[in-house]
Amino acid sequence: MKEGKIFVVGIGPGGRAHMTGAAIEAIERSEAVIGYKTYIDLIIDMISGKEVLGYGMKRETERCRAALELAGEGKTVALVSSGDCGVYGMAGIMLEIAAESGTETDIEIVPGVPAANSAAACLGAPLMHDYATISLSDLLTDWNVIEKRLECAAQADFVICLYNPRSKGRREHIEKARNIIMRHRDESTPVGIVHSAMRDGQSATATTLGEMLSHEIDMLTTVIIGNSKTYTSELGIITPRGYKL
Image (cartoon, rainbow, N blue to C red; front, side, top):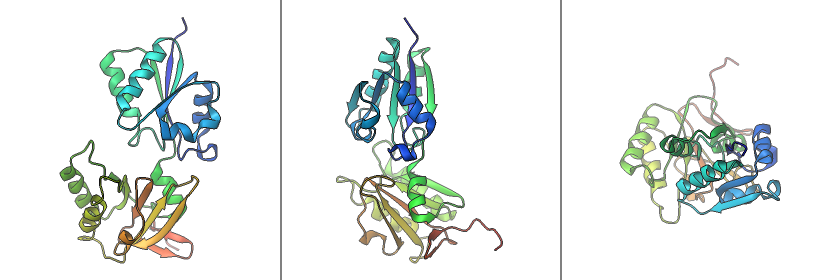
């Protein structure tokens, strides 16, 4: 029997145009593709004829164990994540489960374009200086820890990129986050709100810290909050790197 292999693949926003060549090659080489069903649907045109296992939310460990099982049968498997698989993605849990199992299966991490970078490109150049990415989902992280990270990032004047800002069952976290950041930022601080970056239905809005909550924000949204030097021009939101002009 041939040896199996697992590619943990970051598919970026989802379309081929913004997917790395290595990611496309890994999916093409794979006999089976596993992932959250929403992400599987983004690459449906690439996986015809392959064994496909689509899962719902909160079943990450099942996906990883299924990948190990198929690789144990000698198959090449692509375990896919949107964005970069190492940023709030499947790379970490896959390696944790593989280490726990003692498997000798070859596992290769294939990076992709993170949501922060896709969203930033829609807005201009808001991430040109130091920035922090913080997820507002408290499914796996205590909210008091998230609050502390928001406080520290705001106080240190990082540009802040918020992932998972609001869901149907988690409406107030984005409001609490905005209020924490406003302790250290002026209400006129530029904010970018991007929905479905680089996908069908994309929208990008430039607003301010004071006005950001008047715009639609959901789980398909990435929010980028500028630092004290960030400004908005006709060309977009810009965070200066510090070059002399």
